[in-house]
Length: 197
Image (cartoon, rainbow, N blue to C red; front, top):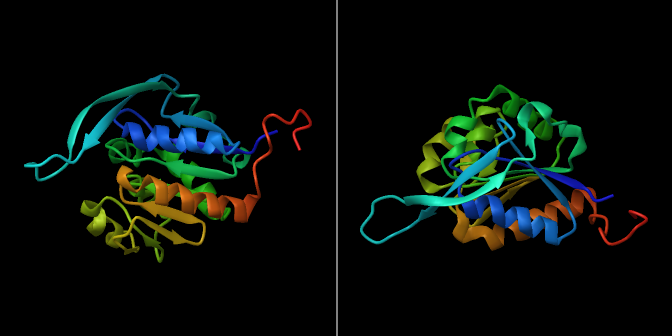
């Protein structure tokens, strides 16, 4: 049986930051479940960095079904957690079920990958104090308020926590996250192996 990874998100998440890790981790042989506040079709967005704008722009993105509601998640069934960015973390951080899920991963020392605005969720769950992180650059004050040391880099690894700034850094983010995953839980089972070994 393949090892499972939980990806938590919601409406207005950045399409690339959900779908890139979802597909990349499945390529590696992991089973990935997407959890959201409720089971429904989620509406993602596309953020871009366009000349003449002082901040990112937003356009409608893909839709994708949530496999589970946060209330249905058993954190113990997963070897790692992925927290994409976009605008979704701005409201998801207030979800008590999600904060419990995130805390379970930090308490268990299991790998957590976060990107862009995703660290708003880990900050709300109390998981960043004393940690080194990166995030979307505008979140530097939020990260410092959460007790973290902010580093402006493609990917920052602090123990089992792997963070990244935004979708242009995906390759570095997933490369580092996969190293942490392999070191903590070994290689995933081969989904083509009928024995599940």
